[in-house]
Amino acid sequence: MSRQFQVVIDCHDPDGMAAFWSAALDYRIDSVPEGYDGWMEYQIGQGFPEDERVRFATVYNPQGPERVSFLGVPESKTVKNRLHLDIQATLPDDSMARKIERVDALVAQLREIGGTALRTGRERGQYFVTMADVEGNEFCVH
Image (tube, rainbow, N blue to C red):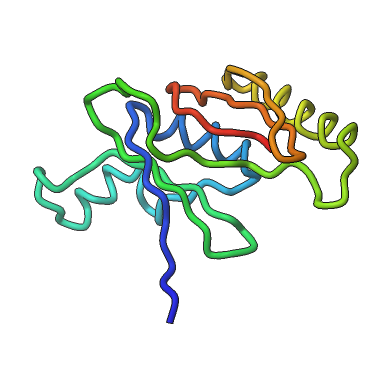
């Protein structure tokens, strides 16, 4: 039997990262249970010991089980990512011109919300743009 998983990304600002990635992936931000103003308040209300409370936010695919969580940590990113996400903006039958159009359109949207385009490339019939999110984590738009 296969196992479900979620990706967890260490960051400084979980809420800011959740806002960026919910827009990038067209996901939804996981809401705090009713009666609580935030996840930290929820953890306190549930009796989590102080040393087990964490700052976090999660986005999820409204049509499926996929989730990405953002865990608040004090340290900054210092080296190149060893793992990155690829966002698929194109369709399998798109011409190269259409691939470029779709990728560039999504890149423009992501730049408006704080993403940074780092470089473009073509490889194995694909056009892609390597970007950085609002905290400098690299990802690709294909």
